[in-house]
Image (cartoon, rainbow, N blue to C red):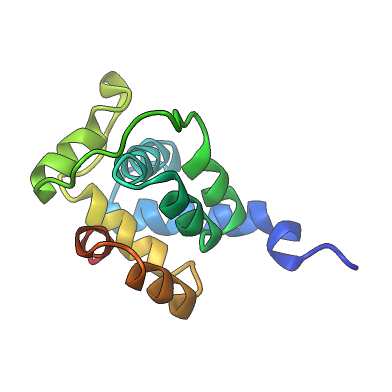
Length: 139
């Protein structure tokens, strides 16, 4: 079987995603956008069970999937969802001295992410998650 295209062009697709996220959030660099992305993904992951998180990871492009599961303490119990302001604040706590995340980090990542995933698969997956998890990804 030939190598799946999603793996063959993973770096190129990730670069496109990061450029889209940088532009969406109006940050200066993709490095700044990366920290914001990582913070948002970690905030979301902390609110899911391991099974839910792995199902979510399955609908992400390969590099985003890897970022989503990296540095994960699977023994940590899921946290409760909070207000958008509190969740955005938590995303900004990742590397705070180098974090340029916007006040709307979650909405910015959600907007860009939706342009780079299979929309039908993403919506099917969100339909299997609690309402607060679905709301998280609604820009």
